[in-house]
Length: 300
Image (cartoon, rainbow, N blue to C red; front, side, top):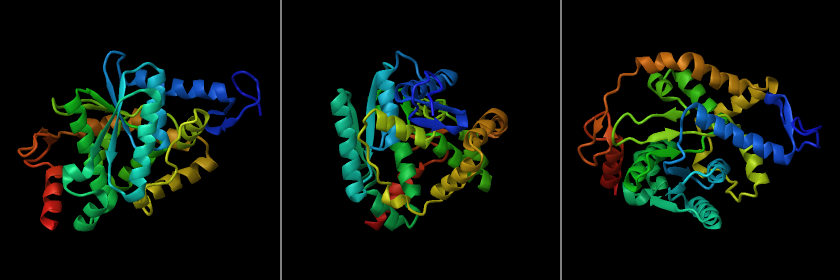
């Protein structure tokens, strides 16, 4: 198998692109996919600082690596979820990555903000662990960006993540979620920063290959609370479709973004206001994060 670009021996075949690349040309391809996403959706500007949400996994660290290489002024944000040894190891990976490249890393702790780590939140609320965790991460990412003067947060969501999220929203016809499914969410309130997903054009396999070729040391283990999650099942379904029809994930996601999302976006009419307790953005009087903290406090 030869590299589509230079004709040398290829190291990676990308069936959905009907292409194969040697290691150097794949790295160029990967970075161009990121820069294309940034340019197409006007995600970032060279002048503004970018807060990169990092988990210690391959996707977020690969994204941070590309943005550094492209010359963006970046800082990382690691949210310590307090999930036993998994959080200890993932935090260490982020700290080592930042130290090796001489870039800042901000660390926030869910337990300090909510009153308990994610395992305790799951136990006292009896909600799926990903529910309280996702709520906390969205809130804390926005809060950290505002506190440190970042106008935008970049996350490592890849093509597989976005296609799986879309499938879950379609299966339940969650029209509010469909309206928000986008590679770039603008700021619609002074206390809501922009959120962007520069890896949405790249698959999980492709980010893993990039991390390997760039010798990025990342945590391989999945979050222990991810086992049995519906999103994992959706990923597996889409991967089986991809095996039979290369490009299925891309066509599903990109077809929605180009042809269907505008209809859901027009239908959305949410009025945002500030939580009377913490001042963050919400649609009600008290935000969901403050309600979660109250529930944890009552249980304690």
